[in-house]
Image (cartoon, rainbow, N blue to C red):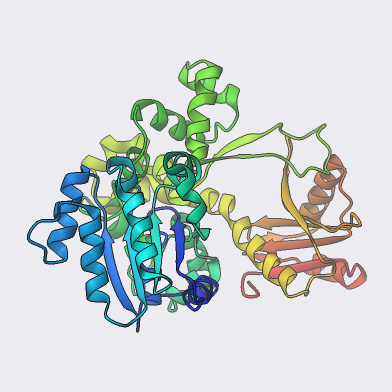
Length: 448
């Protein structure tokens, strides 16, 4: 089922409607929905689609020519000539998936593509797709040199949002959608591994833990797709997923030098598999952690937290028993770590629609030694919204509020407005307090 992507479809339609020919690069993590987006966009258009493979330029020519019904393609010019012949009088949409394999292994591809564009003179739009974000952002332009000037736009396809997840799992409650979203993130290819007619628990067992489950090996595949030395990268990701999120923590766990760890973390960050988080820039640094590392993809974190270090048990135990013994007890803590992302999306939607008490233009979080502020929003005048998000507690009361306010004091941030998000209930005392303090808002799971 195709959900979301209205903004992306409009971007593509606007480019297709232009009179001059367009060359676009659309990229994002594997599974984020690039191909699905293209096929939806291509409906009603003359489409020529090719999925490149990791092979030599000669083999690429053979495979592409074979798909076009050619006896033998001896050049990319010949391939493009056949595509032009089959176009007819319609404007052509040419989509080349995983194009990095052509750039890496076929030196003459981009020159031939440039000649093809010139020959059609505005009668085509070319879209190059890639799942290699690091290649597009760091290697692509240096490889092709002056030909990069002909690229009309680079468009990075982001993960889908929580509301898209709600639309996809329509039979789920809001809480169940949150549980799925915290594990799978906004990668629609992962959503397809879960059956909306099953509970989240049943889907984790069938979609992740069973021996033939589609996502069981996905964590290692993500890492191995572009990186060598899996022993080092998996060691670091395992440490991060277990809560060792500072450089020194990883040094003590792994025995690797800090310099080596920094290099490998940088490689992971270039591929957006790891992120480094700093506290909000206007907040105090006195009681803040100086910068922490986190796994950047939610499913990758789930894999390294629950599956990677327990392979013996995963292989020997029935999937249901493994879930009950190793996954279920720690899931609330895992969901707590990711609950703030749903709350942040909610606040961003309100901010875009000017439904917050301030018009925020900066956002972030504050990671403290004794507590953290999940979301910080601030406008140009320095007015702030602070938000705290609680997943597992049955009831939030005045004791929690006092703790939140103490955390704000440690961060030296004045909460002009305070939002409390919770999956549990709010105490009657706290509700009464909000009647007198209008800058405090309580948001329950049903509101989200």
